[in-house]
Length: 220
Image (cartoon, rainbow, N blue to C red; front, side, top):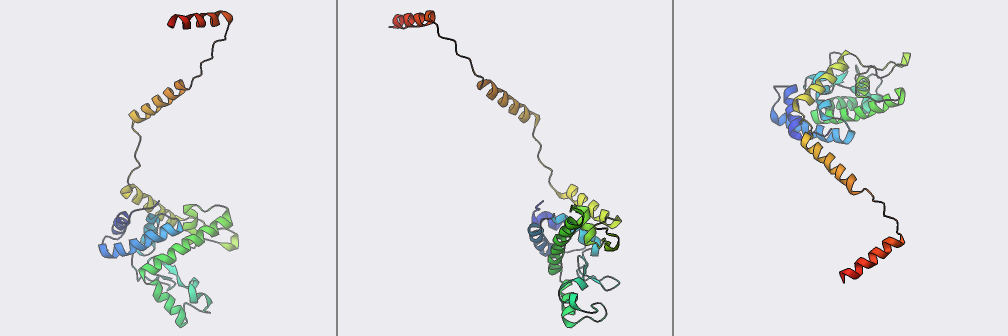
């Protein structure tokens, strides 16, 4: 799951070809750490942000609700949660939250926290927290009125497919054991088995004892 910084930078540049390498490196450093702390693949973060904002840090949704790289819904963050009308009449504190969400690094950190929260929500409501489920929950695909939670849709699948494409494109393949190595392992196992075979001792008899004594005298 854990990806090197170089690979994450490459994934970001593929997601938004016009991004400078310095900008990608700055975001990749934050994403790498957050992915490690919150237990998700950085490529998932790259794919999610690509769909949400096409990696435009100052993006705001047409309805004025969602902010920044990962299109965080501001009304559920910090001081905005206690505002009577965070969309049309946000307090100064809520406005500061919205400005903060337009900071790319901060937005990625909030995204990582929300991934963890949505994973916990899906686990609580459905008993599982699969990739497609918590991603759907992040996208707001929960329907409390009909008791339906974490329902994947077309947008969810787009993120999943792009994440898989990044893995196939950038992740190094796992080394495979050569047939010769496998054969050698079987030979070693066979050798150990043969070496462990127990030989049943012959039963002592008076005649055999006499022969042993005779042989011992002869060797002297």
